[in-house]
Image (cartoon, rainbow, N blue to C red; front, side):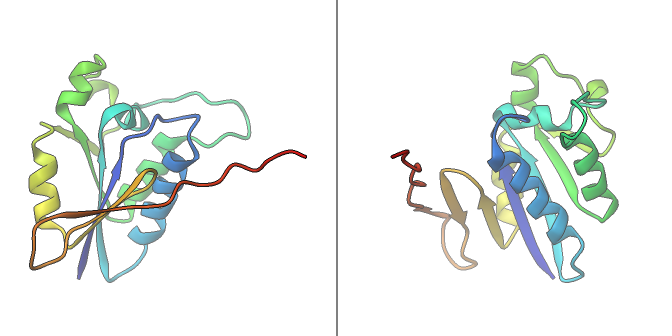
Length: 144
């Protein structure tokens, strides 16, 4: 069974990368050959806040994460990041657990692959130290 770690550090709303990372995690959690962990850090911890009220037609990340957990996915929040934002375990969805930021290293060490959507792609080959590959920036469409 493949173990995949998805690291999300973007804000809950206003960033397509955060929404797409959770969509990817949900899709992967439905596979039988993968065990998925979502690690929320930085502003990403706000994705796991319980009872988010969004305008009609907008996605609700806390509901998406609950669906992810129902399919066997694990949600881990950086404890240091939660503390910095004044968030407690009581304000999070039940499926999320808070751990110190150093746990990211141990979570990554237990997985075979790690993906971070946005600025970097992070991969951990099985036989060597973690590596990081810089992805090209998206080009902005120009109005003529």
